[in-house]
Amino acid sequence: MSVGSRDATAARSSFGSTVETRLALACGAVLGTAGLALVILPIAGLVGRVPWSRAGDVLSSDGALTALALSLRVSTSAALLALVLGFPLAWVLARPPFPGQSLVRAVVVLPLVLPPVVGGVALLAALGRRGVVGGVLADLGVGLPFTTAGAVVAATFVCFPLLVLAIEGGLSSLDRRLEQAAATLGASAWYTLRRVTLPLLRPQIVAGLVLAWARALGEFGATITFAGNLRGRTQTLPLAVYETLQSDPASAIALSLILVVLSLTVLVALRGRFLAAR
Amino acid sequence: MNRLVTVAIALTLMISGCARIGAGGENEELVVFAAASLTDSFQEIGSAFVEQYRDVTVTFNFGPSDGLATQIVSEGVADVFASASPRWMDAVANDGPGIIERRDFARNRLVVIVPAGNPVTVSDINDLGRPGVKLVLAAEDVPAGTYAREALAKAGIVAEAERNVVSNEQDVKGVVQKIVLGEADAGIVYVTDVTPAIRNRVETVAIPGTLNVIATYTIAVIRGTEHLALARAFVAFVLGRGQRVLERHGFATGP
Image 1 (cartoon, helix red, strand yellow):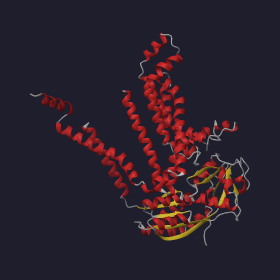
Image 2 (cartoon, one colour):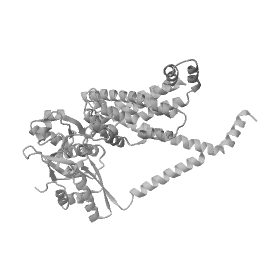
Image 3 (spheres, chains in turn yellow, brown):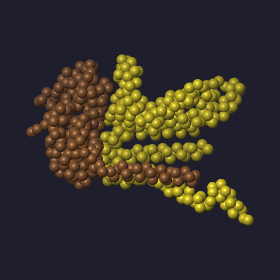
Image 4 (spheres, chains in turn green, yellow):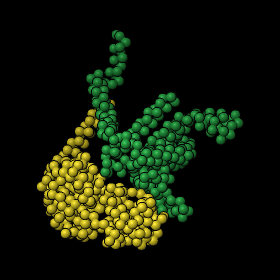
């Protein structure tokens, strides 16, 4: 008996008959292709409908450039704010279990599954002019709704679970003995964090930041609900796409292309990061 | 794994089967695209229509007239279109599938609304140009936004007011929502948008007739509809029994 046929016997015994295995593979291939088509077809359709002759004018128009610049500012600020707020939270969640830890984790992840428009209404209830905290802020002369800062808050709300989860994953798989070793060698907690923990976590921090940034870039529902829609102040690219779509779909499709290209570039770059980290 | 695949395929077939049965029933479905400002009145008209004709379903898609017209032009999915402005009916007639039996069926006027308590004391349309007033309008291409800017222009304060705009909403109901929530100081909407549901949460400031703008609502059957008879019946219904419903909701009717 040759080596090859012994392998085939082993495969048969673990997967059942070869016919069934082939059938399963064929089904898998068909469904997998359908799944890929589900994502690729709409994007291809979008690209196919880009009015290339006008695309240059649309993309270099004041409105598009203003929205793009605002989008980049808002999503970058949101990702950084999410890092500042999310890192300590990830730290706590990666600690040994404490009572209520799973509840805290569920609450942190909530914005990820909540409809963004609900997030916007919730933000208004809390930070709006008549909101619990927003009322106090308004008395101090700080108003978030209808401001760029409000758009940043809305984007941070939806993107920060991604950052917390990425960093928490990194912290959980971290070899804690390295930190302990640093401590035995006399390093202060701050020095250990800066020179040991953070460098070890860099891949997860970068991945979390990029994912959060991409999510913030695409944010729509919470932004339009909480921050409104005003060119140059709160009208990010997705809002500009939506407004343009109402009366000029061709231009809206050209604008959408910026978002597709930006998001794709970032995800491809991120994939490179992941591979490099391993 | 094999069993899993079988179960998944069986489930998929079941679900798609259900969908087909649901769509292929006896019920004839009429799809009506209507301006957001018609939400309450058309829902009432729709119920009355279904009561009279039976075995029909009327499905409404309410939204900004410009957005609805664009959807009809590109996808042509509606049987009937009711626009808050002749401009967007023209778009469907000229750039889209075309229309039959176009009729004007109602008129509306604008009003300034402020949150209950009127936080910044708006007492006149001219106050909307005062620095510091947080004003919310419908976006410029949305009929309510176009009309609002016309009224502000007649008052001679369009530039000042435009500087006060904190948000351009996607339809007139978005303006109502921002005022009801108290987030903005003032907005311009149709008189019919001040419905009983929100009457105690907003205050209104009338716009004098000389500065006001009359919005003319127009309805038509979309050319190529598969439900021509039913679509015609619906338009006739809006122009008949529907008129009283519209009047009750604050619209002006008749010549």
